[in-house]
Image 1 (cartoon, rainbow, N blue to C red):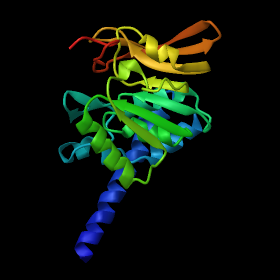
Image 2: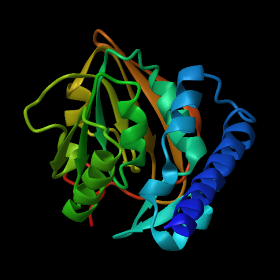
Image 3: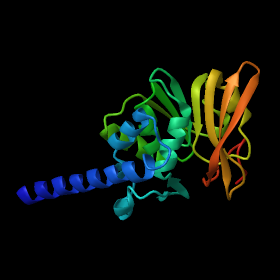
Length: 225
């Protein structure tokens, strides 16, 4: 029992060290400047969201496979998209593409509540289990076509799409509240443009952030399978 306990502490310390390195090198060392985002990225254990075979790469700055043709995004992109939403702790966020649940967990620390959609029931169940173990309770899950938005037509102050779309699905624009912000990768299956949209009355202000690579979002208003 003593040996096991010591091993657990050593393992925990190992991840704490690489998490700090990720923060210093890949986030603070680039353009992640929001102290709230940096704190959350330091607090959320990414190793909980990757499989045993990829534990050694849990804090490498790159995506990792999570099964079913999906990936967990690289830490920098998770932090960047989160920072671009400019959350105030009082907003409700719609996330399209639960995936591993890592981005969901990060959003949950900065939002009043997160509503997240995933088309793969297996991934949604896995994410729910991990967030449950971490004691995160301000998340509502839904399995279905994310391109159709949240099923009851609810409005959201913030929306994040975590898979590439050919264009922003109209149902998601319709669910973006006045003065709300939507962040998404838009473009073909190769390289997309990460863009932020802000709704101001009848106008949508568009701002380019950077080039990215995401898996495709399939659905009625997404890509065809």
